[in-house]
Image (cartoon, rainbow, N blue to C red; front, side, top):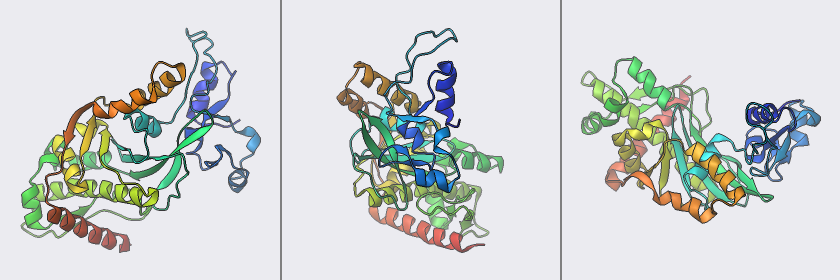
Amino acid sequence: RAGTLDTWLVDRLTNGAVFATDASTAARTLLCDIATATWSAELCALFAIPLAILAEIRDTDAGFGACAGHGLDGVPIVASIVDQPAALMGQGCVEPGEAKATFGTGCFVYVNAGQVRPAGTGTLATIAWRRDGVSTYALDGGVLAVGSALSWLSELGLGDTGDLSTGARRERHDAGVTCVPALVGLGAPHWDRAARGAWLGISNATTRADLAGAFVEGLACRVVEVIDAIEADAGLAIAELHVDGGLTRAPALMQLQADLLGRPVVVAEEDEATVVGACAIAALRLGLTTLADVHARRTRSRRRFEPVMSADERAATLLRFRRAIALVRQWG
């Protein structure tokens, strides 16, 4: 038998009574037909994986048996959901066009695409959750390294996250330094693992603050690229970006993100939106909350950042970054 991590956990918790996964998790395996939320015979044949060994796919809140042993006898397993869709629910993004980004090791952007499967091109179409036999879809785009990239920069002696997010924006623009922080390649919408990072425009007048500031600006520009690609794929306008994760505690970084997006960035009330979302799915099934109550979570935030950068400066910064991306992708 073969399954995903949730399959293993459910199997262990139920003492082998249930061997199943949920639709949101199955959708991330490259083996699932997300239009029907079933295993695809064509894809399984392509990867030489027998259909018979795979776990049953259930709705996200269809129930996954009851615990047996572990001091939890009889406790029901009401729901199972993979991490990023759970964060989408936890941020209250239950209507089409509502988006969240989790800033951690990488930055993962999800937008609720509604109940019609989107045709992702630069981004990935997936199942956010499936309830009562109906899938809610999402578009997913990732920046592969954000927190890990900042850790690398810190190891070079260019400062910690707080220093990086506040460092010398004005001097950086005057110096004309641009950075593509593609330390492990480029994710959405380029999907170019061979691409590598670069600082462009440096001179003997370039300072440590210029390098650090350009690096952080490059990370924020990558998130803008992902948002733009998702909007194009979904045909939806994203009015504001709801964010969670450890790096949302760097206020200047969040302000820079709002400036370059040209839209508000709203920091979640709780850091662990994934846990909140998983609990919300279960609570909906148990009748302990309503979708309207979950949606109302969007109004509860720790902080809201409004863009203050001028439209001309934003356009010039993003144009310079797009030119840098084109150069980096030609390298090697």
